Length: 235
Ligand code: HEC
Ligand code: HEC
Image (cartoon, rainbow, N blue to C red; front, side, top):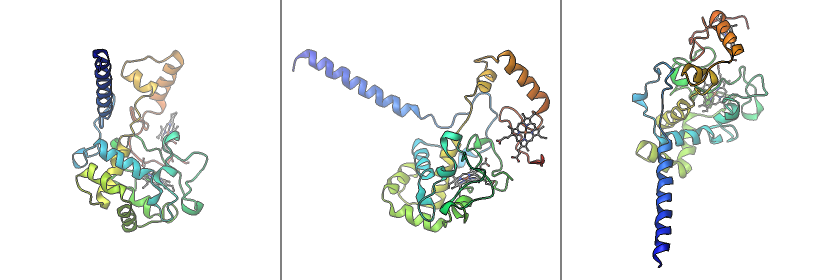
């Protein structure tokens, strides 16, 4: 081989390795935005890894979690509309059955100490049991979901990569779902970059912000725009 060709090949190998390195570095795990308070989720019980996140994402969009294999978490929590179900006033589950509420966004859940519109669930790791077993949402049982996951061979490897063993359990499944949901952090709005002093508000935005601070901030506490309380505001 000509020396010139060897140089080309070496350069090519360098770029391939460089690209590979970049891909593995892309996943930075959970990062607290600098303008946010400390999260309340107990990460020490569920350390977020790329493999755990990937498994959680696969589970979140797997319709096998429903009784007739048609509805996934992502059917009602649609990523392109902030993980809500647009175009409906209440959620649609299996057999087009209607719920009584619409899906809230999946975002910044690491800062929530209670879940659902009425705060009825206190632990994110237990939350998925509610939609999976709800008769108008996914209509399944936890044990049957487990059976289906065990029978789908690709999951064994994914569980092993995420949690060290091929054994598929409900606890691991729930932890992986949490890992995916916890990574849905919304902190790149103009508001956030202004708070981080990377941008400034226009005159109108500033007037709106002042109005908001006077009239709304008592309940919609910055920077998460909620005080995590529940009030009857007459709606
Ligand atoms: C049929 C539609 C539907 C499906 C399927 C569904 N959800 Fe939901 N989700 C909802 C609705 C509606 C609520 C609000 C329920 C309430 O307030 O009682 C909700 C609430 C939540 C919340 C609480 C968010 C918050 O801010 O309080 C989380 C987390 C969540 N869902 C995750 C999931 C996961 C994980 C799955 C899949 C295992 C799933 N959902 C499947 C409709 C759905
Ligand atoms: C007394 C407390 C309180 C004050 C003050 C308040 N809100 Fe709210 N706001 C709420 C509650 C509670 C909800 C949720 C209502 C529900 O879903 O049933 C809400 C919901 C909202 C929503 C809908 C959010 C969503 O995800 O659907 C918007 C937008 C909103 N408020 C804006 C404002 C603005 C703008 C102001 C100031 C002019 C304001 N709020 C003042 C308590 C308050």
